[in-house]
Image (cartoon, one colour):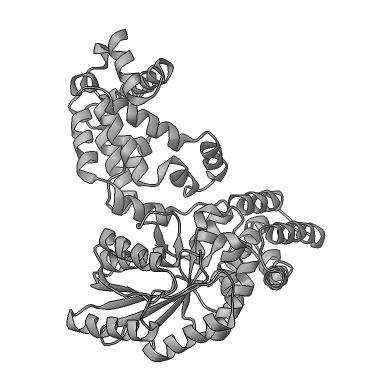
Length: 457
């Protein structure tokens, strides 16, 4: 996420962070490079100007001059100002009304609005324990209504049917009335999008907003549209009393300009980031965590939360006990570890959240480590249970059968067996409790949750 911006900024700031003394000249030179990096990342010019002025004001003042490590203090100022630019802290949805709380979703066509409705419904069900009803008021695209129905079933949310011959206001009012009958806590209303901003769209959505008076009006915007994000955000902000923003496709945008500009332009907080196509790929937006990641300082808090939520502790504990008793680390165990890593978003996702690992994460992405993991998983799945437990059984004919079944070749299989042998050798060193101590130590660091041995290594 935001790789090119992160890469440019960390390179610019690396030159200054190690310096024992900062002069007016080297501060100015660094700020020039930072300014260029932000503009190339599609951050809006007024936003860049304000940001640079604030950093300059603080960097040339007493704050840096009196610091024990001026270079590090300068980096801290940049991080603080970057966080302030994006909104300072995470702002949760305000659902503190007599149920059902109504959430209206607005945005252009193609921004990922309908998918975001389903993702938000899933988030509220799982994290806030809310009963959620979703409804589509998009009477121009029958496919959008069908899509929402399919997604609602996938996330186990209530779906209120609608059709293209109805009025959007009637659809929304009927859905809210039905939500009261079934004691739903939240109603999420999907609205019609357009390929561009037009008067008809704005008039229709204003009327709908006035008729249902939502507690939250969320603007859904595609992070990949760059500078256009600012103009679109302005137009919607003038037409509607927005309460927040959902920034979609953030995982596909290497630049990050929209994330840095939208808050400044609208004055409204980014509440969620869409980071993939799957229904679980929605995460609360934490400005301080993103600022830290952009500056190559990692995002350990997000990694801790993912470990807590997504890892199978029972499997981790089972492996600890197995290795502790001196039993061999077999291919079933390796497959479990690969799956645990995939649950965390893959190796690249884990590395980019660890401090100082941004460049290694990029290398992992270039090497397509995720693809290699999937290939290894396919090879192991093509084996019999006996072969997974004892790789010594793999004679040439068995190897041919496995590679044919997994769509790989003998070199891929031999590489996997070599990697497994190295890992098994390493696991032997933890026999008798060393492994357990290491894992539990990591578990304590991770707020009590287990960590996969693959990560522990």
